Amino acid sequence: MKKALVIIALSVFAVSCNKTAEVKEVKTAYVDTSVLMKEYTEAKDLEAKYKAQAEEKGRQLQAEISRFKQDAANFQSQAQANGQAWAQQRGAELQKREQQLGYAQQALAQQLQQESGVEMDSLVSGVKKFIKDYGKKNGYSYIYGTGDAATILYAEEKYDITKEIIKALNDKYKAEPKADAKPAAETKEGEAKK
Image (cartoon, rainbow, N blue to C red; front, side):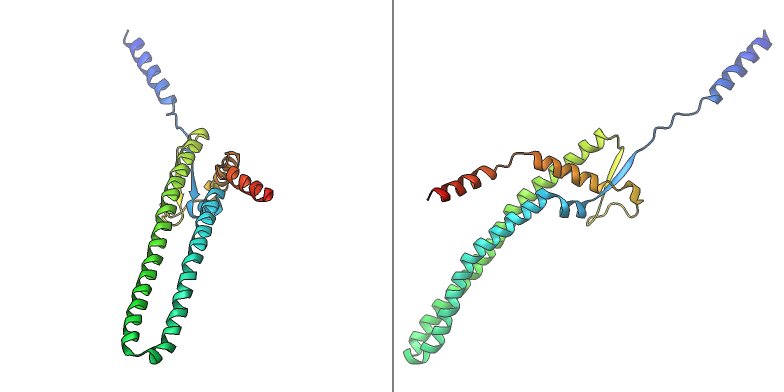
């Protein structure tokens, strides 16, 4: 009986030693976020949109600044002819106008920054969600971010999936219907009819 117990114990021990621990492969990758944001079409479109808005609104303000500079130049030539009292009154008006133009420039910059910031935050949130879904779908345990706010100090290039993510995001963005496309087309048709 003792021999049977020893043989059973040795058998159980041998079987348990032969089982190797199952090791799950950990699939990791990283995305260079600075490259992603430079090459992602939606981010480029967003940047172009706000650049165009800044130029348009800046032109309007620049016209006012040009008028102010012309008035200031005229003031210099007319100051001696119209006397000191006129010069003081007109000079105060010009200073007030200059200050208002400065405030208008600051307000415009803040408005554009705030509007673009809201859209950029939304874009970044969408990209993060996309990468999370991409990771789940493709069996990644971890996808790290690197770039301007580096969270990785070193990674082998074979783990870089930035180009894959950019292509997938751009494909998804191209497939989405554009909200701006119809009004622009209608505007062009309306102009053509005129």
